[in-house]
Length: 281
Ligand code: PDD
Image 1 (tube, protein in one colour):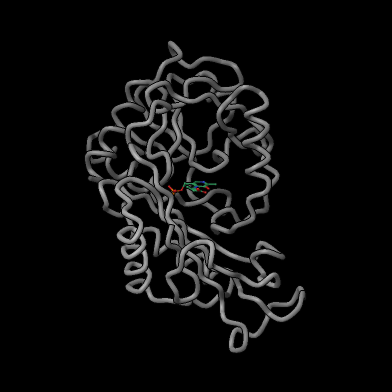
Image 2 (tube, helix red, strand yellow):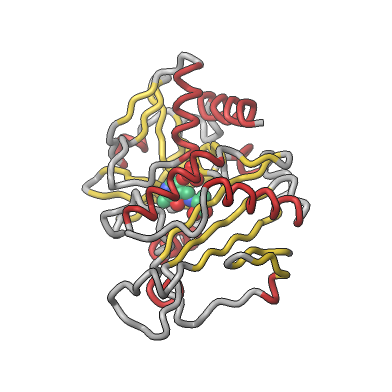
């Protein structure tokens, strides 16, 4: 696999990053995941805009323009022959010569930028999407700037492991009784045909897939409500689903062992997945 590191395209075995990189020592970095379907990047503009916002919020300089980033994405997709898959991008606050809590001077410590592809043949045609996934609820103990897409992913990883240990596929995080989001996706319920998902704030990541799915739903005259919902309300919903760049629209068929509807992917979830894939291709 050919990867990109600070200006160079290299075989992955030759890519090197300093042990003093602040991404490694302090999770001081941001990332994006953009999906590729039929060789085409999905919603690159949305991901680039959110990346810029994440960098600004953390007072980090952008190491490349949006046009340059697009070019790197396209080059990696081509060099690695990706038809269906993902492009991962990470920017960290670089590698000062030592460990220090204070941010280094960006004039002497440039940020580190890394991109790589993940090949996922048949990404849009996953058996999981046909069966739906099971989720468990876990407390949301993350920091309060979840709108910034940082590489601090230890708790979401732990939440995923708690789900696996419980025989489920993923975890929904809950704060004050309300669902915030999934470990790596935005969460929705469907009640009486209405699509309900948490409103945007610093409490959740502003999903690029979420924005597209809500836009397509409204265009298709489906009813959408952006508001908090409790985990108890979710267990009584007709349907549930999650969205992300890596899973598109994924039906949820069980929450904390409670089956939703007849325990198979719901009509609205299936329709949203179909619309999203149709519109994206
Ligand atoms: N995760 N919420 C969280 C906490 C996420 O990590 C993600 C994405 C989303 C969905 O955002 P988007 O639709 O822009 O992908 C919501 C990516 C896919 C990941 O970490 O791999």
